[in-house]
Image (cartoon, rainbow, N blue to C red; front, side, top):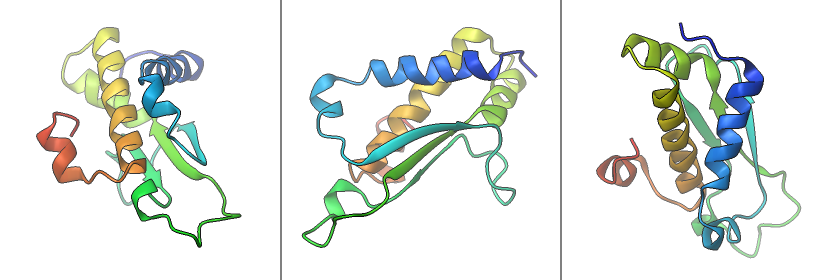
Amino acid sequence: MLEMTREEFEELVSQALDRIPPELTRLMDNVAVFVEEEPPAHDPDLLGLYEGTPLTERGEWYAGVLPDRITIYRGPTLRMVAAEGGDHELVVEEVEVTVVHEIAHHFGMDDERLHALGYG
């Protein structure tokens, strides 16, 4: 497996978030981003997960709820890149794709559309 500390990985996630255009980040509402080591046991290869109510599904009823949660998983990302023979640069790319993918879910995009756009 590639060697990368949790702090280094968290910094890559932060940098990926910084590259999201300000026009989009201004529209993000009630969402928090986390880094975890491993995904749920039933899906060990999961790189990221969005949990919440997409902006496109929120209505007048949406008030006083906990923030949506985006989680980026360090372990499977590093294992996948290592299995592909990748290096630090490929980790950077994969983290960015995963962050964009999960933020797109916050905006209401589904996996089919994201795969078509190259964020699968």
